[in-house]
Length: 132
Image (cartoon, rainbow, N blue to C red):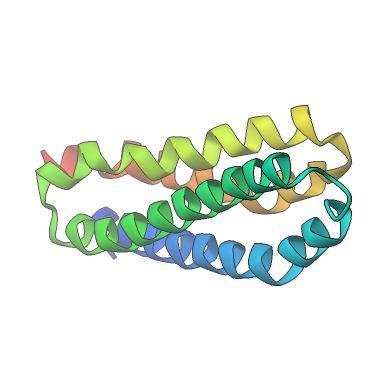
């Protein structure tokens, strides 16, 4: 199997995992956030939810982008290669920020964002020569 197909497969799986992460946040975190923010003034509550929804939008958009990039990587389209760094660095930045801001959730970073971010990064390095 050539490197382009492997890289495309890694991006496809990573994109699906990002979308699953968005669905998990909607099912698990949003109801908790509703309960925790019951007594907060409405303006601040809306700002908190805005930030969470913008995060989910960015996370989902990067998931869809990774899935779209996977098809271009499999075909060896050079223009897709540069675009592929967006979801890659998004995952790597999340892997760093999760343990910094929520140390009790370090396991999410270790199991989820770090492996997929590193896999995407390594696949880009390995397939760069074939795409050129």
